[in-house]
Length: 425
Image 1 (cartoon, rainbow, N blue to C red):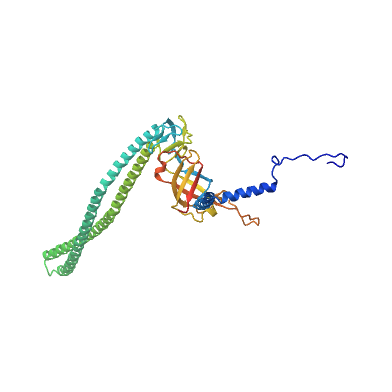
Image 2: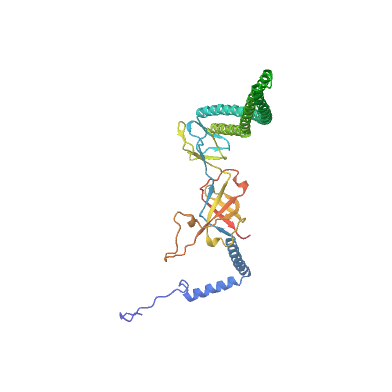
């Protein structure tokens, strides 16, 4: 009934069957149903098993994530072997193309060998000339040795002979002096007799004949004195001459005494000739090596990359022509955070996921770098400025592949990878 309008109205009749239940009744029904479900043994068992599975799964996940360290700051590294020309010249032929796989020892580039062939022929001629000169020097050594030995022996014999001659001349000189003294004595006696006979003949006490005999005897003894004096002078000259011969013989002996030095000089010349032969032989070897260097060969097996040489180009010694990347020798450089290295050490197994092909490879930790990457940068950070902010550093870790993993040559240096180092088994 509506009292405000003054009209009595009857309240509308409510259908209890279609009226929705009150909220309290709804909550009560929900709780009753939940209690009834929870009282079901099967439901309770399922809930217990689900909770146990979640706990076990969480524990397994926790153990799994603690069993490895990984990083996406990693890439494949490898050797980039540069191939350079060892001699200068004109490029005649190029035997490889870009990205071609070659074996070690394969001829990559051919340089014009004409100049180097001429150099080899010239070196052969010089070598033959020096060999002949060395052979002649070797022959002169025994000849000079025998000759100087004979000269020394002859000079020594001459010295002995001239000394004997001096002795003989001295004896003759002494004998001549004795004969002179004897002749002088005889002459003195004859002169004395002549003076007595002169007095006697003047007194006519002796005959003229006796006086003449005394005069003849005095003249004979005087002549004998002159002859003996001449013999003395001649003997003295012989002594002087013999001494001169001795001086000459001694000079010849001293000259012959230089023979061993001459032999040593000849041997030195022979040794110098042998050294020249070795030098010429080395020149010949170098010329032959230069000729072989006109064929530039691959130092290792790998893929030809970064080729800059072309046919017809004049290259210089030391000029880089191309690079060879050996695909059998690649590894992973992974930059781990320093706090990831607590349990990491060489030898631990690694699973390497390669972005390029989506494959996983097996490997192991080879070594850990001696310093962080920042220390090897061009301008390493200096933290002693007062503005120090701690930054987690990254340490390069070298990871090598198991040998069987690289047989297909799929990996290239520079590829991005994500390694997982299994630090716990």
